[in-house]
Length: 115
Image 1 (tube, helix red, strand yellow):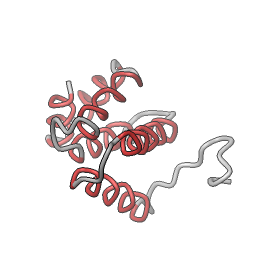
Image 2: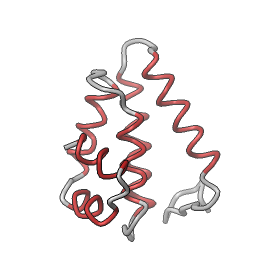
Image 3: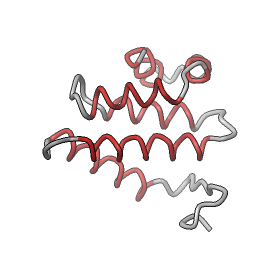
Image 4: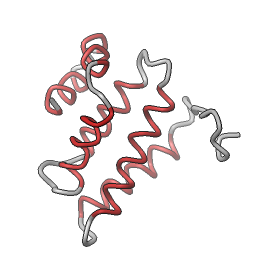
């Protein structure tokens, strides 16, 4: 599943990517991210980028989906027993994403940081 999401994002097949992500629930996304971040089964940045890209396309609730991805990544980092290169990459990417996301700044209803 994660390889398909990454491939569709890399190929910019936006309609197909949107359709695939509509079929994936939060628990599945959390599991994919946990496998890559905590268990270090594969490099996580490509998946995180693909998810953020895919959820920015046609999702009305994209801000909530982005927040779910960020929170899942943070929770995964907290589960790790020790600091690793994977942890560093995830932290660096998330910080970079927040700093450079000037074109799209979602506001989340009820979020005290956004309001």
